[in-house]
Amino acid sequence: MSRIIEGLLYSESHEWVKVEGDLAVIGVSDFAQAEMGDITYVDLPAEGDEIEAGEEFGALESVKASSELYCPVSGTIEAVNSELEDAPEKVNEDPYGAWIIKVRMSDAAQLDSLLSPEAYSEIAK
Image (tube, rainbow, N blue to C red; front, side, top):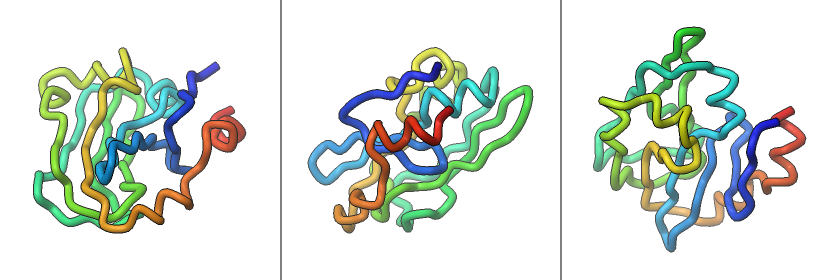
């Protein structure tokens, strides 16, 4: 059974969002990393890039598959977790600690379209 953390929001494409003021901290769910297997590479975007909700911002690669990452909110990429370039396995070890990007949101109302932990648990079965 995958861990789903209270206090986070989730997208149907298995990204999680932690809201810190007008920043959205984004990573991938425990379910997503478990489905992928051992992650061997994380493709990260550039800081400062503008991004739209639903737009691809990177990818995870594993021994089994490659999976695109989609941004749940629109805004400016303020930070990327460059530690993942040298240690992509951190996504497997601690998917809720190994954030991937931080986005300064341009429209916080977009959070309303994301899933609660309860709603996400219905998808992540």
